[in-house]
Length: 415
Ligand code: RNT
Ligand code: ZN
Image (cartoon, rainbow, N blue to C red; front, side, top):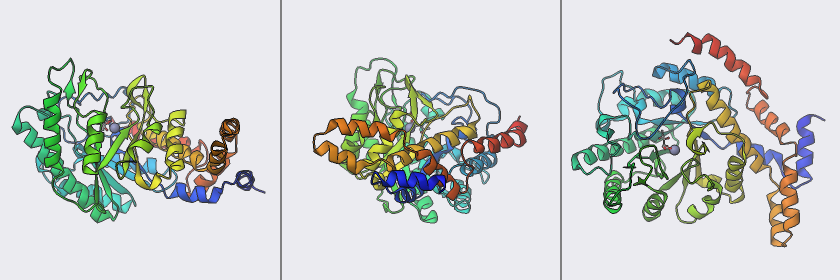
């Protein structure tokens, strides 16, 4: 008997079909965030600060300096992650080899090389307008700016990105989720909390006015509790976007770092999905605050994945990652965070949920707790290894050797 068969039998005794779990795991894509590869820099070269309250710390050598390098790094990462996944692009990663345009004038032209690359690599694409790192976002206000001209510029950017997203979805035959996040807020106590929110709703209505086939493209809006420079007030709060998404039946994007540290995304899913059609996740790890650390196989990540499986929400959830760590090998950061997300999902898929629910319905909370804890020492690692074997990626920590070689041969040659 091989190791996987032993695990299969162990789980079968609990009523869990490991083959079904592996199938579901293989069919669930994770959208890797392009911005882990170059510290949210992008290749526009508009100069100046990252801004928007985003902060990437660390100076590990080997950061991607061009689209070509970023794609090479991504290809290396995907080769070490089991399954078929997606790429989540930001508008500031536009390809300007055919000429530069400002953000309000972006079209598919600047993203065609990404689409071609995605097609060649069997990846779906997701997209984000970039409302930071731009002279017109220098005072930290975009869609809520008092100046109608600045609002108009950013509305045009949002519209342009939705069209590009739809074209990505069409060319790749895979729905693109375009997620809108803005940094707008205020460092100190605002006198007027109302007017910026009214402006935000009006701006969003303008951005989303054009109807787009949901098979090609879906819209998501991402809330935040606070940011650096918006400690006292964030216009796009959770209540704001939850209301907006429900009213307009678009997607809520839930970022694991965007709530009070004692709150967990896992408890939000079943409430939000009661009222919006689908959600987008930014799987992340906040350490004391929205610090965007690399995702671990920790309790919050596991609880999040369990919730998706227990509630049968996977079909209505788009899983993306959002963190940026420049203090370790950036390609490894992708691999570690994605593999951990997938491990969490596998653990959730292997849970004897029917049994847990039975205990719960019968009021036997003792057995419920006992079984939840016993599951932690079941041989799920053998099932994970089987997944890696079937998906042709290195087993265990062997991926690290491949990455060390890549670091030596490629990353270390970058100045
Ligand atoms: C910022 C949001 C947002 C960004 C990316 C780069 O707090 O989490 O998702 O991280 O758009
Ligand atoms: Zn996010």
